[in-house]
Length: 401
Image (cartoon, rainbow, N blue to C red):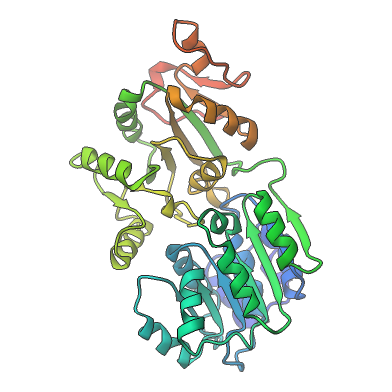
């Protein structure tokens, strides 16, 4: 389906054309009429499927520029995702008289208060900072028509569920609620039951949790050989931009120090950095000024880096959900991408769980664990019939499944 078939406001349609938005993605096509009609929605889709626009475009279509109060509230787990939403909605709503603004921690409250008093119709917020304003400013949700909970499973992981329930209790008027999530753990299912009224349920990732355009490469090696294995991956001439994920701030710091002087355009981002520094790194990476970004999971939460070709799990992901969110930074919106995961002996139990749960087609770079066991190593049975790459091409990009 094309955007010019939706009966959009002329200016909105012009803005989408300027952004080269012609055809709707599957999640956009299935959710547009539901959101436009004001119905509640529970949407599950693979990460990178276009959920930001799927939410933003119909909200802008429904917006009344003559009402100066907050008509749509979009809750997101991280500052970077909040900024991404504002940027997307800004371009979608150019010259439509609609003000979109983001509030999040690490930025002066008084500046945010001044902007809110000037008039905001679409507010994007992290839960903690929104609650700060509800307690300490004149922010009101009296005009709210639509509440969006984006990356709901991530907000669960970050401990925001109680905050979300409190925010909902502050909304006194009847409103539409839209919930977007890549996964559906039990607490999110229970939250959906309490938040949504007769919702339409859409599941585009019932048979897969990862983008189809993403190749999943695993490399089994000794723990002390991880850095050498990583350096070989970084020599891949097909690697345009890469995010390297570590499980902790300390692990990322050690890796960052060890790689300094190696790959050009290297940076490290984590939640402990000052907001100004995080924003600078985020923008430089998004603009292609950096080639390699070491990150904790703060950078794996719904962000759209269009030039990322490779995601590398230097530390094995702590959960199947973390794997889904991390690897979804590549292969977005149908683009080709590669997810490379380093696997050591201590990771084998989590590897089994991951391969059973996420239903991904595996490409082994070198020998899988089961073959190494035949040569006197640990006994482990990898999942049946994985694809394999020859050792002679270990430093090059995968051939694909």
